[in-house]
Length: 196
Image (cartoon, rainbow, N blue to C red; front, side, top):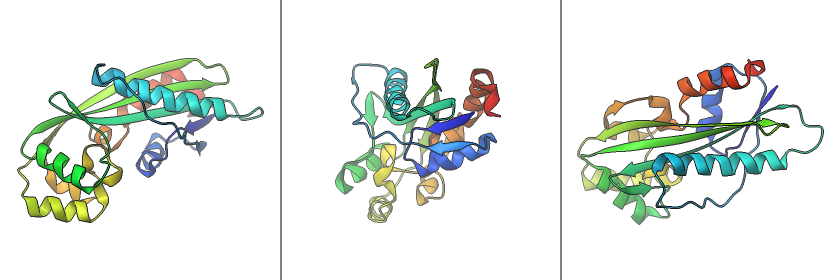
């Protein structure tokens, strides 16, 4: 079986390698991310993950190897605010200033769609992250490096200077990177054991 990764994220592609699955095809979906802000964070990430997985499933043509499409989406939640990817540098600065000295939650939704049957499984993971207090100069330097522009909440925790902002994590570290590897592995073993 093939695992079709419905994501453009280079971080997710690297994390997939930790699962020990050898037949992986990166098949990103180019959907416009639309969601209802009145829904819970866990519902939002699962809905967005489903949209991505379903778009990739539809794009698989006849004759593709049977397998599983994996869609994922990550958001950062501070209080009752959802922080996606910053639209520009000013928004990135504002996000980081808001996260400074506070605890926020990172939600990742994952949807697995079996191809060609369409059988599905959906779950989410939540990790709490506490930032130390940041000064304006380090926020500006980080934003000017360009690193936060493609990341939910305007920071990265891996291979990125954003790691020095994180004082404490409660939950799955890899969930903050972009995929909850432990729970994903457990779900995949039951959902599609032939992947391994």
